[in-house]
Image (tube, rainbow, N blue to C red; front, side, top):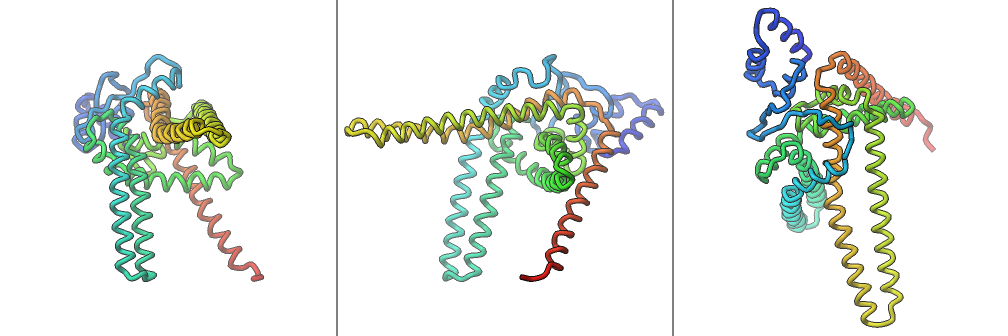
Length: 342
């Protein structure tokens, strides 16, 4: 967010403009309702903003404690988004296969030259990474905007993926730089950036503005964020161990079976277990995104008023950690350059 907006609003109010008039002028200048609401200091619980024609419900407090009924609410969001997410995943896989075959054809037509191999591998890797990002971030967009249109979800995802990626790169520098300072600063920043995908998608922010907003949202809530993420991790670990034991038991049982019927049952059980594992690994990333979204809406609804002081303090820390990151890299390369060769 532009920090000058706060002083502009103060001057506009002093000149006699109403909040509605201020809102109209800011929207005409390209500001989103969620950003304007934060600085105006109030939010209509049923007010809606739009982005590319998609209804976007304003964040509101539900009267529940942060994270209350989080699994039930995350499961509900997952069920609402599952079909669109699955379709985008299938389309992405088809696209990746087509491009992959095209890359292989390029390698073959190049006469197995080194350049052909390099170009083919590069294109394949680039497409795979891009498709993976699109599929994963489409879950954020679908859940945030509750859109039922596949085309709209893909369009919004492509529109948001670059701002999110750039903000993610900056966040990486910040986290690693903070981790160089005895780990704790990096961990605190990583907890704050948990909500970065939704801040970029839902609040229409990017770059340092998105990171500052994450830092302000997490103020006073890092313990709750850490606790919720640990619960999610242990649930995942428990399900994974259960499925692993199930798969192992079925495999061992199939191997010990002496009869044809026993071996058939064991083989069918193995196939069924693999299918269950496949469904789980399709379902879980979407559920994880829904879980973090519920946590984000709970905490962000309590942090809607712009905390400029906290945001500015966060930005100074981030810049400092980025400087530490690059100084450490330069220092490491310097030591390697001057170290005696063996």
